Image (tube, rainbow over all chains, first blue to last red; front, side):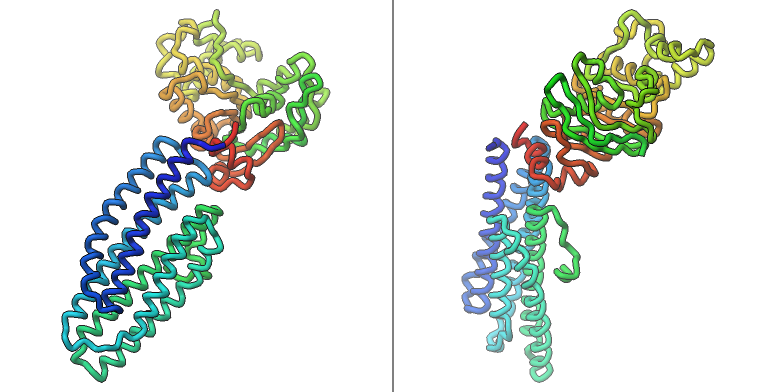
Length: 223
Length: 250
């Protein structure tokens, strides 16, 4: 039986997906700015952040309204609780894309920037894949996809550790590059946080679909 | 566990209303029975204090055990049983010709209590436990029907409590009440379970979620799911429970 409430839930999901699309584009611009040396991409990130912030409030308002007026239970309740949490994760991911933009600006401001970006391009790819997959899992209600995201988080963590160590090695021989090295470390740090938020989204998707809470289980590692 | 039904079946003539319902009720808990109209939930609780058999053509199968004793045993007097397993109905039904006081005292008098001091003390205790004393202590002589709907329902609860039942059955006790009276009864139930085990039939899912420790979902005379209320309303195990509580049918 199709309920009026189903239409309301569809609208809520659509609104969240629009926001997810903006966050994905922010991360894409961040990758283009740093890896593709496309400085003009940075202004797009700042513009998208305004949009994401507006959507963040709007999705929360919609959830609050549905909780108050529909008093949902079971799968409906789990979905709305998941949307509230995913909404927060997406907003934080948007902020992290902005942080990456700041650090990229600093990194690119120096004319003597080292050519080496260590493994950052690969880390960007892996993180964007996780974000894409987490959002897909939400759209398709797909538990298998969500579980795949959880498995991938370790790879992003490994990239971060390797990048930290590679940059430290470079700085030992070229201490004058400390500002640039520091910027790259902070970019890796923010990418790792974005991947953590994608993991949170995947966990929330699993909760919405099955009702089981897989957070903080050894399988998924720390997040 | 204070009360349990085993493979409980109920008929109205040839029509089978309950198909082997087994439930266990622990002491000092509130259990909600939910399900769509006609699922057998009222019939079920009416079997728990032998009211079902008062309907012409009605009969039961299976067993109901109160503190381990079969309430359908040949030695059990249904009238005495109903003092141990009291009932509150959908519409408040104080005895219209009786005062507030007498509505509560009548069951005690029938039970042989005659001393005024003892009657006074039990009436006051019952009205206090039913959270009605402060509102009626100065009008105990007025007719029970002069009270508001919510007060009348609490009067009926006090009447049921006066004879110190071990189980209190409630058949949609707030469906005829406004939200404020409903909230008072719900508050009352969480206090009452300290003294009596409560089984409540309700159509209101939010009410069940708010007040009960366990919930049973009945559908077409069958028990579909029984479990902790918090689990049943967030992660029901059976698809039919999910469909019912999310309003997809019924």
